[in-house]
Length: 330
Ligand code: NAI
Image 1 (cartoon, rainbow, N blue to C red):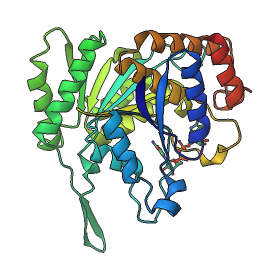
Image 2: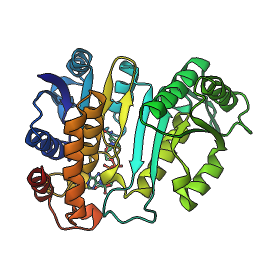
Image 3: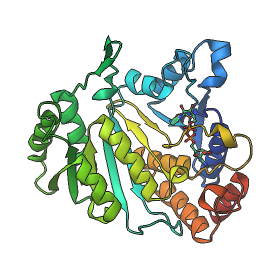
Image 4: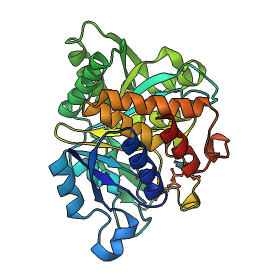
């Protein structure tokens, strides 16, 4: 039986994790979940939101499904997510954004995959106070990280029958840093003659995404643009409740929704488990369980097509109603 780390998170994390575990169980797929607590709730007992045992578990199992965890503000704790990405060298952040059946949005033909570099850029956290009225942040772009994320994007495109990989930069202004990212893309692109190439500036991309998102296929971006553009794309398909994600490295992969721990609706049986479920479906595909992934996806889509929605999508179904409907459809 496949053993997978499950970080059930805090806030709405445990509710949506329970829902997803129940749905996967109902599909007939047997998974040995190695449940690891992390986040705000474990700080008191273990002194850190990311105890060593969590990393050890992921290193052993190689794959994790992660519900959101709260990052305490102003107490000196670094984000668990940023720590995980660093500790496991999860260099690629993958966010597929595709319209879901019956979920009404401004566009009905969005099918974009955002591939975001996850380890450097302004996220390197190198900042200094020059004087009381001046602060500086340093943008770090390396050839190694740029080439490997571009290779990841092209490999993903080939594996998933995608037609185009578009690189997004502001290389007209940041000629050295974004220029290096663009140069790396051009070099890697030469190895993929079957995939269409496209280069776009990030400001133009945002305008085009709002006007005509269906023209885009796979996007590859440095960290900060990737962060912003992936939330924009999540908005195009119905918002946080349905936006899935994954952090992937050479040795390990952590699948998680885009949203946070939603403390405002914690424990109210209101949370939408779709984003975590879609992340789990992507995880099942990643480990080669395509038929189960497909069955679960069909059951989810049927539930949505039948108009069963949680409150964030304008419906009246509770987390439990929604989960039960998916189980029924399986
Ligand atoms: P959030 O994503 O938790 O919530 C924003 C809004 O969206 C809230 O109104 C919430 O109720 C709603 N929402 C989010 N997910 C939902 C779902 N599945 N179903 C229905 N409604 C949903 O963002 P916020 O409030 O900024 O952050 C709360 C905490 O989460 C913070 O401590 C933050 O650091 C943490 N966080 C953790 C992440 C992770 O673990 N990957 C990612 C983002 C934030």
